Length: 185
Image (tube, rainbow, N blue to C red):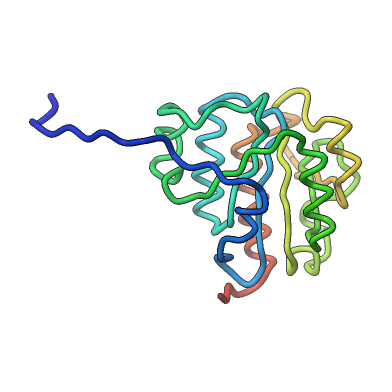
């Protein structure tokens, strides 16, 4: 039942990495989430929702091995895709290298990481930051690992050995927000 109303919309814009960095930051520090081989539209949409809710400046996707910004991603994002700038890059490793050269810390979520999310010093969260999340199962590629400053694990106390990538992103991003201190523009 369409209620007699129709709306035609175009595709959502995707920015180049330099364009994304040129957008005004939403807080004191620049924050970017990068996804490595997260291909499920539902997971990407959920991560978009969490990313936008945590006040992150943008999402970095690869041209290959990432879904298009489809209606499925938009539905799973509950509208957050309309607000979150998205950039696509051909090579995530090169993009992370560039971001490091521009003063970003790069941390990656890794269940076998040597550092606990809760034990990383606050100073890493009080700076420009890229949070890299990998695909469920294979995780982060080795080419991405070499660009990480820290591989963080989320300490789990139960019998399961990992979280869904969207749940892990939510925990990591809101912990980063909390540890960064009061938000100021």
